[in-house]
Each structure stands twice: as C-alpha cells, then as structure tokens.
Image 1 (cartoon, rainbow, N blue to C red):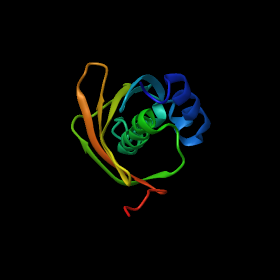
Image 2: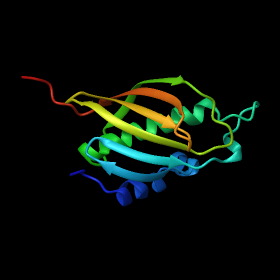
Image 3: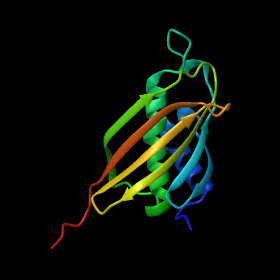
Length: 140
C-alpha cells in the first residue's frame, strides 16, 4: 500500500510554487509508481510552437519525486543528482501524461524512470532520474 494518497500528493504539488504553476494533476499512485497529467498551457510553447524541453524535464524530475513519495512518504531530505531526458517525439499544443517508477529505493540513492506520452499514447520523452538522500545512514 502506498505511503501517500493522490490527494496528499496533489496538496503537496499545490504548495510548491513552481510545480503548482505548471498545473500538474496527480492521477494515480501505487507502491513505487505515480501517474499524472500536465495540461497544455500556451506559455509552455517554444518558438516552433512545441512544448519546451524544460517543461518536459521539470515534469520528469517532479514525477520521480512523487513516485519516491509513494514508498518513503513526503520528505524534505532528497535532492536530484542526475536527470537525463531523451526527447523522442515532439509535443505540440497537447497535454502530457507521465508515469514515474522507482527502480531502486536505496538507503543513499533513489533511481527511477519516467515515461512521458501524449493523449494518443505516443512516447514523447523518456527520463532517468537519480535522487540523493541527504540524511542516509553509513554502513557500520
């Protein structure tokens, strides 16, 4: 059973100004997994009228945090140490759907992946994200 509910994560999103401004909507949680929707906003467009890559990267980074919260609860002791986004198909004036999955929930590092699709199910981006736990315990 996840340590957080959809409602708790949405409340958290709504209290973080940058993420709140994105308009992220948490849709579903299960252990180690979080699904969300990012409705399109015209301000997301870059000069080719495609969703800016920074929006996609922000979505991926935020989503792995949400997936990790399903296992560890909402914490303030993790930071992103690596974010790698591969842009596979352009998104133009469309909502994005994200599914984040924790692959390793270690004592020191948390590693996962995020798949981002449009409403047609086309994979627009794939990301891997690594978080560092700031208060990890050293092995004795």
